Length: 353
Image (cartoon, rainbow, N blue to C red; front, side, top):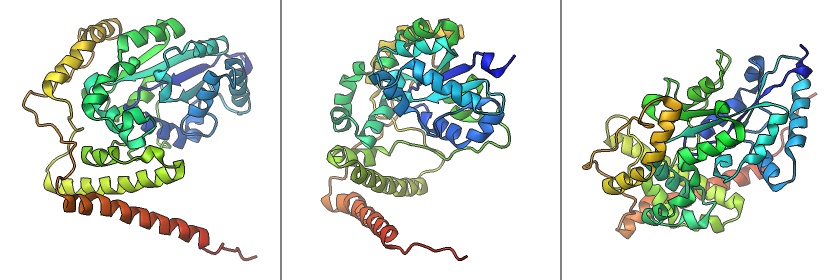
């Protein structure tokens, strides 16, 4: 059978956020040639397909146009490509993704959705909103204020959202993975994604460094008080990078004081954590029965009632605040500005003939 007669697979990796989606995207983008050798196309030479997905949902491009584009890209390769992978975690934020169902006219469509226990996801999503500050309502509020808004994150009602996926793509085409240490393979979330789509990486594949980690609660609290979202995009990126330097230094100092690897920060009090998980218990149980033939979706227990929480507060002493946060921020900004000016003023190299 000719390649043009084959109905290829199209795999949508839709999130959710805070389940190593950036690491998966970095891995796929960094291994495009190796992926092709195994029959997988990660198209458009971009790490994340957010621009193309936004074009689909705002009407700038139709599924038919994108399908035709993808088919042409497959035909342009003199190798046996059987699958296309598109990744954008913002897809899961959309209430209705029925539009993506139209790709079934040209492809065998599958969708990969990764689930993280809701209480832990909320903690991580809170810190991430502060880090990137794309939504002023979420990037400057306190944790209690943020948790009161959690119904806006409709996609973490997993059972309800997965039923929407089933309606659009068919139950047999929905692939669920569980972002929980004991339920992931030794290679972690990246290997879990590869396993979910039948990808068996060879020795030619290169693993990414850690991508897009949350900042520590203390640095996050410092950033929460900064109006980074009011800054122009380039300037905001410099400020965020400067805060990353502060965070890296703080983590190194903390590592010297503590033994062993530290887990993610715990911010939500035990009683509230139990109440949050009770809200999702029925849906989680239904999903566990339907997809995993068991009663519990997530297997790790909640933290014990007496487990200490990580404080979000800043130093009350003004001098300590200046020396640990304000001065390092300015130092990092000055250093980065000097590097930028140096690059602009450096003489261009000339090659000898």
